[in-house]
Amino acid sequence: MSRLFLFADESGDFCFTTGDNISKFYIVCTVVMESCEIGDSLLALRRSLSWDNKPLNDFFHATCDKQVIRDAVYAEISKFDFSIQATIMEKRKAQPQTRVTEERFYKYGWYYHFMHSSGGYLDANDEIHVTVATIGTKKKRTAFEDAVRDVIRQKLYRHQWETSFWPCQTDPCLQVADYCTWAIQRKWEMGDTRSYDLIKDKINYEYELFKRGTQLFY
Image (spheres, rainbow, N blue to C red):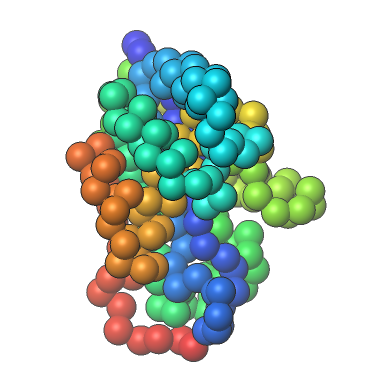
């Protein structure tokens, strides 16, 4: 039996309309590793960048970091062995019953993500620790966390598992997930593959959930 570590993040918003600064896609992204040593390496990188007086924020966060920081982070994480899974949902193709509430849409994405991606990394005897970056207000966080636990309970019932829900800044491995999610988001939303190309060899699952859909609901 081996223990796997899964770190998860999402990108996109829950606005089901078109307009400026509204995402076209909602993306659930996970990174899976057998060791968390990549986190130790990112902490060491942060100290090195600080020594060199580079423009650091409070923690590694791809959206806010300067390009010189992004380059250093992608170069560092590329040295390690881990896999990436992503489920991409074009929000305009989501049927109304799947997005009655934010929590319902969130759970829908997580359910299909685990259904189709977990077979690529989880063997019959593996146990897994799932750590998810927290989002939303305190009230919404509780609902989102319950949704993830329910999905895991349904999909990983044959496995030993535990869950944690932490802010991204508390664990450098969550920051790895953030960087991978950002790279995939840039590809799908903007056609920008600069960062995606640096991690694409680690992606073992990237699926557009509503690809076959033709109807746009807004």
